[in-house]
Amino acid sequence: MPYCRECGNEIQEDWVSCPLCGAKTRAYNVESKNDLEFGDENLMERVRNIGEATGPKPTEKLVKPPEPDSNPRQKSMSQLLTRPLTEFNYVNDIFGTVYYELINDNEDYVTYIVKVRGNDNELIPRWTALVWIFKRECEYHTELMDMHKLSTPERVIHTTTAFTCKYMRKRGILDYILNGFEKHFGLAPYSAL
Image (cartoon, rainbow, N blue to C red; front, side, top):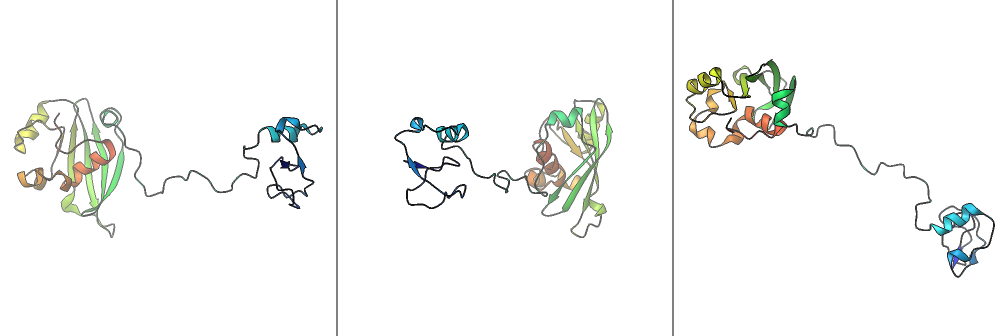
């Protein structure tokens, strides 16, 4: 088998230069890689490890970073209840960009104000709402359940009453407020406390 004297790459006997390193070849044959009897230890090591990458490092990154507009890694519900984000957002296909801003965090619940901006970045006031994420049952949770005529103790309650009717509750995907919590924290719409 012929090998290049510079890099140890296997080459053809009739090649003028090595395709890997470009060195002029004086090909030589050996029965096995261990039969080499010349003094270049570096070459001996390369020949022993043929198959390893010995060429130049690729300039292109093999693992590309995520696109800037891709969704961030999902947080946990535990983080939402113990270390809530001060703000976050997501893009809803129907409503526009939905922004969440933390306004209260106490032992019973976390409260956000939710604002929606259309494609022109204009605030759409009719979709502004307050949303409570309850950590446990409390007196305020009971009051909100009674106010919205909810039969099950839900973890998330918000002031957009259009989304609390029976029709909408069967189609949780339409509730733009709950969808943000599902996208960011894995909290399913209408989940029980």
